[in-house]
Image (cartoon, rainbow, N blue to C red; front, top):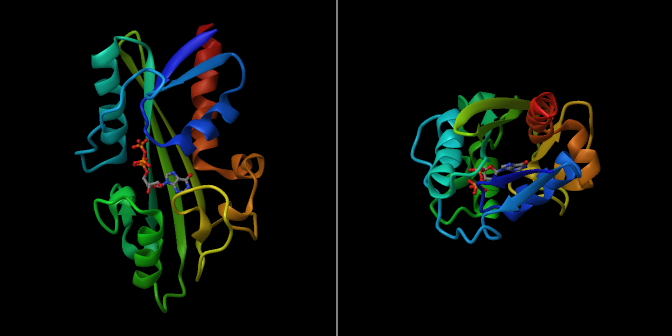
Length: 193
Ligand code: ITT
């Protein structure tokens, strides 16, 4: 079975990715690998931050691994919060603070189109592969639903009338940026088997 370390400290991402990758790929979380330090996200693009996560962990372990960075890009806010999505309302990385600020900044705005973008950086024997997944949708006027994490309560993907936070994981996986990116990763690993 293929083993990959996942360079994240977000347990919600680990749950989602285990459900997406199935039984032939064994995901080891950073906690399980005994790696507890924060990984910096110093760059101004999602692609570069994804690479930072995988290369830091590869440098520490020498093992095959991947990181992913995700941003919510709102058209009328010129792509914000984008690469700054995790710390939009400050370094505390609070989902409720981030949502509050986003809704405040979109107060009175009719055009609420947005997209989630996920970029995965996979390092296999030190060689990098990147995969992107985009999910288009709209930002709601208020929070709806209790599932998921991050901005899920305020994002309705195109093709649905529910926010991600009103969906179970299986339903979110039908639409999500993360599912699209990880399908591509899965295909590459299949090819290499
Ligand atoms: P790691 O860097 O440790 O992987 P993180 O939570 O900091 O975890 P990101 O920098 O990729 O992850 O996330 C940027 C922000 O976007 C952060 O606030 C997340 O909660 C949010 N986010 C990421 N994926 C999301 C999703 O599928 N649905 C809703 N919000 C999401």
